[in-house]
Length: 462
Ligand code: ATP
Ligand code: MN
Image 1 (cartoon, rainbow, N blue to C red):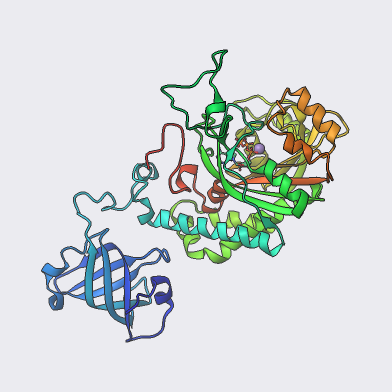
Image 2: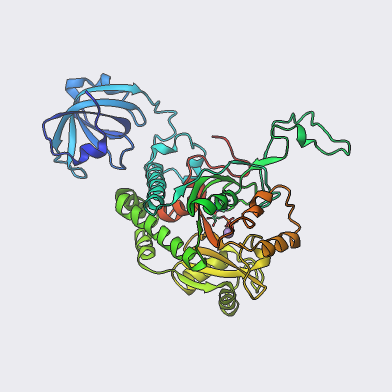
């Protein structure tokens, strides 16, 4: 008999019919006459209660059914008289696939801290919390593809190994097959990368944007969704060395269109979570963050506040708030500043635009004032920056001048500059950090808790 998933069986009204479920034991409790086994198979946060007539099975044959063991149960579906569930299974046959020793199984008891669970990343998907987070992650990934597909955007795969280091020199992870113990050298004593696998220096990508722009110059509306890597040594609750990013890039969009898309996109995703991940969100709301669901609803139902960087700095300077990092026109905003604007001043998500060109990337469209660029950052409660984007500079001369001003070597990105020579189009795009989105949707406080195997400085165990 084929198994039925617990999520489906919990909805069933086919009483007194036989079903097979398979899953992991969360708890077994009871007495000499009757046992109750809670089984979870990951299809939902809810467990199926299995009722066992102990004398029929014999106590000895039940001794391996302990927390963490994997079992197959065949039994009758009945209307439950107990509290907490509407249906239950009355067991006829139980098969233990895999035991879990009560002395050594780390999840024997409930109530472990999230910090402890990080040290057992190989087992934490078995907890209610991580089951919920992984299901929400899946739902968000699916909703991202659905959103763009419904809008006619084309999913483009950009390379993970890149030969251009224009965006984050120094913050990149080197990709090489050279023998580190015997590095080939050039005549002037430098490492000879011409002997490396690709015949040049290569790194893991920090963003798919530049390649995304190339595709947008043909397909007009595209998005990427892939892993990105940053070797920045920042041990914060919001940074990973390996994270996933969604980067839409659109021809014929100005900054206004870009902001509209960003707001609509994030609101769609949050609404999707509210509609499709209800049980998991309710669990997280009750366990970790009593304001989670109301915060999600608020974001879906309210426009994001839009203002310029200059206006924002003005508000921060006049706020009288004591910030750890002082703020003045020209400084990059820190998370504390972003959160002040979002959580204290406006009490809603904020989109800041027109940043000083010195603190933003070379490719952003220059404003006529000569000082600012058409950048936009979307700032969220509890997170700070969730999206960074801009209208791109499509003018060949302006882009070239900026590249020269910043001394960016052009030998590795002539192909990018080419797009400004052949059929250049006004265009815009942004990057949404997938894990920052998941942080917001789940209400978790640390980004290490929303990705199965976090990569952070000094941490790549699992
Ligand atoms: P931050 O200032 O927070 O370090 P950033 O400005 O360097 O971010 P961008 O280059 O604009 O980031 O990348 C786009 C988006 O990717 C960010 O808005 C954020 O959501 C996400 N992101 C950036 N760096 C990381 C990281 N190290 N870990 C997880 N997400 C990140
Ligand atoms: Mn940014």
